[in-house]
Length: 399
Image (cartoon, rainbow, N blue to C red; front, side, top):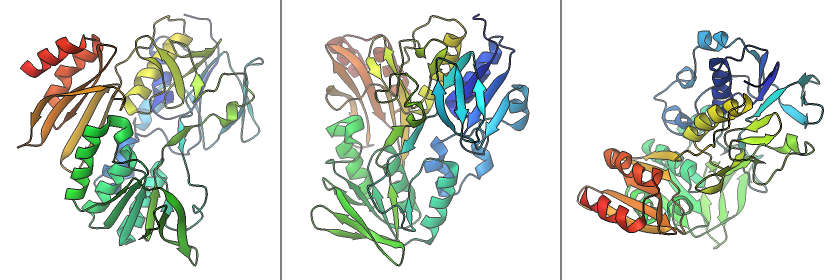
């Protein structure tokens, strides 16, 4: 184990908490400080756009650990405080309350923040969704709304559109791309997603961009689109992606290219590692990646902590993500890029279930399933083993 006497973790969500637990599990007994921008203890984010927004879960249920488990870590929790600067030479982190934390080892896990439109966010009824407080405010808004416009048809926007329809709201889903989640899955899956939303009564305005949010007396009244259409709405969710939270690292000397740039084992500089939504690392098989998914935050938090303690293990996960929309669960492993080869290997139009593989350079790099959880696990091995494309197609089609 490296001789570290003081470790600071900036970011107290999934990646930061996992790193803290890993450090203790591997025998680090020194002072451990976690800095978190929110005043709440660590909680899970995927339920925010699902169970919390539906109202089927209360806020307490998304807590990642009970109070006793957090206490057992023996950590110094600084919540409701933000990091404002990092000096890697002096090994010091400056905080928003004026205090300075010295460290021997540092874990950067400040995640990402929601992108915003150039104007209009000052209007009442305009929301973003990143935190639990955001989700609670959005739910209250949905309960009072009649018409909802969701700007952005990726994972988050699509999931919120689902909940808004389940609540009986008139929903319009807007995106400049031709279909929901086309960037994440490519044309075929995106067309099925579009059909799914249309079947449940969502008005799709794909292939159009927002030019302005309109308002009256300080409250949003709708969305103007670049094709001249005005979409009336008394609630607007802006879900146009997230930006790595690296502003506080501007003068740190770290390489900041689409996040904190790390090596194959999540190290950004001597004594500094990064994990979670802001970490860009070199995957041994898939090249440079930055992954904004729950499982990646957990796995990367573990590897980053182990690297800090002296391990030399490459971080080479098979990325996994899922989304629940209406009665459909979409699950994906690996890379499901829209520019990759795409081949359906199981398709049952009668039940609406299918499975497909993605490939590049003659190898499988990803898989997606639509309401086929067992098939998802079976196809994962082709991604893990980087199976030859033609062989995988034959094998998968025979199962």
